[in-house]
Image 1 (cartoon, rainbow, N blue to C red):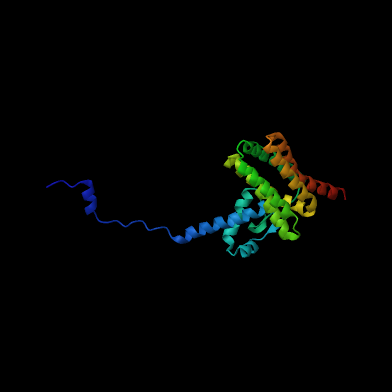
Image 2 (cartoon, rainbow, N blue to C red; image 1 turned 45 degrees about the horizontal axis):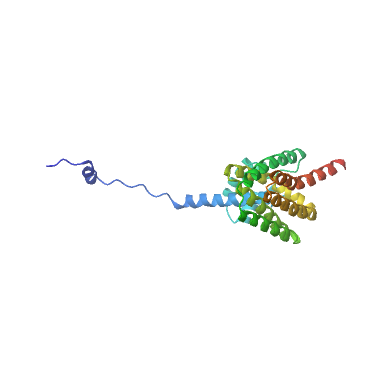
Length: 248
């Protein structure tokens, strides 16, 4: 009689219970947590929160139509990214406007975003230039709308222009740094635009145009200078306000 092969032996062995599939509920919960995090992360980048604003877990949960747990976890992640500051009772708040913080963020944004622009300059295509000009025209049109809704849309359009440019840099790591800086500075920029909207809108459109024109003619240094001016305009306005308050 032929000896049993390992396969044959395995075939005659008692069947073992197979592992049960993972319950669906935890997967859904993880998906919900990520969705809540992405939504809350989008808010500071787009300047939806004000400097110094306290964020209440129950209010955010009600707005997002979810439970408190994913909101708390999202807020904790945003605290670790320095977009928020931890507060009492496991809540959080948006960092306030401070001169030292303004100067630090301004310097970091000019350095990091300037580096992304230089890398992007080597990779921009004709389609990219068309898209950048269209994005700037959209910004100019949207920024002229009155009311808060127009301001929200203008902020989104400004973000779309910049990240269309930075997206061409080819460095996911660099883009992550830029997102982190926008997380930390969104509320500050929004505060400046709300206080000086007409000046900010015109300046942004102008500097965006200078950036694209300079890149098209191959003058990367001029494009970087225009970007530095564009980034610095809101910070300069807020610095002036801080100085005025300090002198009163």
